[in-house]
Amino acid sequence: MDIREKVVVVTGAARGIGRELACGLASAGARIVAADINDCSTTLDLVKTEDGQAIGATLDVSNADSARAVAALTVEAFGRIDALINNAALYGALRGGRFDAIAEADWDAAMAVNVKGVWNCCKAIVPAMRQAGGGSIINLASLAATYGMPFGLHYTTSKAAVIGLTRGLARELGRERIRVNALAPSAVLTDGTREFFGDKVERALEVIKTGQSIQRTLSPSDLVGAVIWLVSDASCFVTGQTIAIDGGTVML
Image (cartoon, rainbow, N blue to C red; front, side):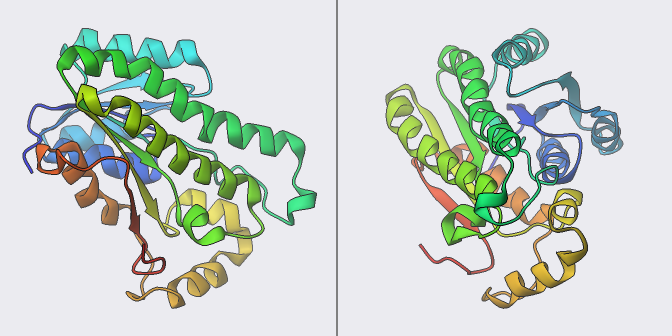
């Protein structure tokens, strides 16, 4: 699973899963563009402590021009783009509750970032992958979509849309040697998870854990191995798949 010198754009890299993926990929030898609407300086500092290569980029995934600017910056800095990790999403900032109590503004925001944001980044970066002769796109979906999480229908629906986008785009891009896959983790112990569930976070994590065959809560590091595999040429015949990283909750 050699990813040395591969150029990887990681969205939502300022904290949580995105930060862990950026650091893990850099430690394995990839050259990273850590992109986020928030400051990625802590992520960059962590990469540098491991002698990794990374640059930061400001990215609002809901804005197509912003996504194109990150693609241009990446090509200017590294000459190519080999992989895109679509991790940026609204989660902790969303307010959960009954489906008919969700604010329309929250619903629209979830779709603008979690769905349109993935589309924007794919549109911006695929041309560079075509130029490079192929690539790998990895979209972060969620157990929320594969299991059907209640009381967060805006988030659940947005992640189900990511799975549909993954499958359709994989069929479109296969002939160009661009693979598109999704990961569907269960609740990962991040600041976003704590923010989403609030004072019910411990109870929520315990309920999720008891439904798993491997009964422990995921940490961001649990996703790194799968991402390295999907970025690498070891997964060159894998596309259109949604890989559950959920401790054996949903067995597809």
